[in-house]
Length: 266
Image (cartoon, rainbow, N blue to C red; front, top):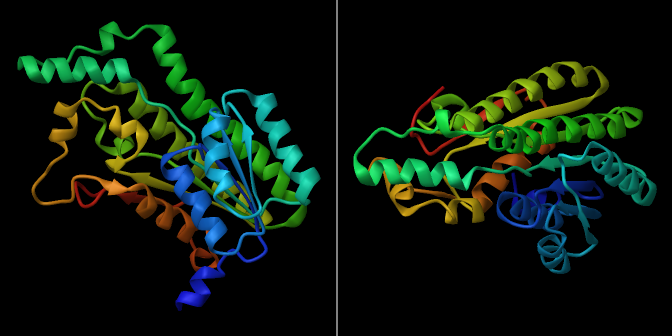
């Protein structure tokens, strides 16, 4: 694909990105704007962070959105439809991890003992991760499919995680939430393609984001496999997401692209 064609991949498209205040969501929003989208709506629970990114971009605006709130997701999508008439591309990058569980794992590594996480997880910690990562993905997929159905077209890309495959020790709730996100997205993909809507997933490995920056150093060091790159960039993950959203990926439906730098294959 030529440079000019690359810059015009999303010419005239209306795009919405969740989790757009930082990391992969912000990178995807910037790239959509650079590649010709006529409107980019940046949604994030931190509306101030999303607003800072939106100010950099032409024809972009920020909205506050907690994806765990079903009514708020429906309302945000309805607002986009009222303003622009359609949504052509939706990148769902909103998600959470569990800093406390990461600290427990890090402490165990430093002390040379196995992590003991599952027995210490309370219901609130479990529900927080599931509420945002899994419930939030369902809310976004449902609203996006509803919005795209009348037009018979659209592309949805969900950010999953390679942890759905390797299930890191001491991180059961996060791994379970992302494995469920993959299965949910694939099930929706098989249904929605009959209406011209493509759904696909990117499953990143370690990626340099704000979430990663808050990871204890001993865990970050553990990712430093000498055979592979320590961390990908958010922009590299956005490149993969937007390939899936582009016409070049027309034959990819329900794909889960493992983008972990070669740490393992699935």
